[in-house]
Length: 254
Image (cartoon, rainbow, N blue to C red; front, side, top):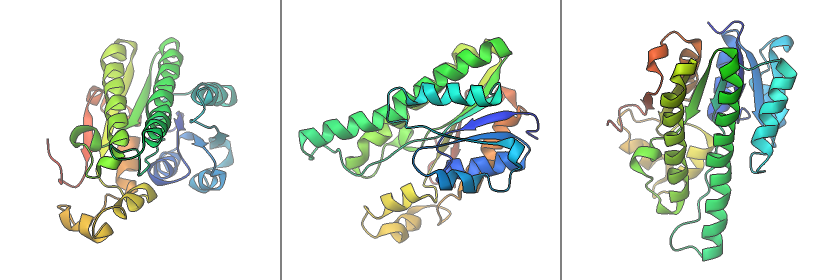
């Protein structure tokens, strides 16, 4: 389904990005897997993909220049990118109203640097790259937190960052559709990743209590997000561009 396409996946070392890299590679894409510190995780994501269809690039998205450097290196190593999976994000469990001002400032600054500023720089780089090539596809991983907030107010910076990123993706969809750039927003619920497992431990009753509240009684498997991402990248439903696709097991319906 993705043969002949070169796709850049940010945050491919673990979680959703790891699952996406594996899936699109299995569907024939050449995968450019970005990692921050965990090269081994990104290598594991590409382990079953032939050597000629895998590229690993390390980049620190907490660095204001990291996103631009990542995209430039991806283009230099491949000759051109057909799709971007804008996935990398962080969540920390402080930075709430009752935390000290210096903690609030640090957490909001750090989260927005990765989840908004670097993500937006990648959007900009992708749009600039795609237009002269006749188009491309962008899949942005947002969150249901962008619509409904979070249950732990100490993580409000994360939900705010995901809402900002969603708005940037929607603007990209409407602004560049004429350039044959399709933009899809995926809004996962509670996904079975280390981030969600860590978040569960901050809640009364832990994971079991959260699963009790979920309609399907389980976290969303990352493979569901990977399957949907691959479909969006395939171009088989171009007029889905601009849609926010909720993947939460019917626990949150808008």
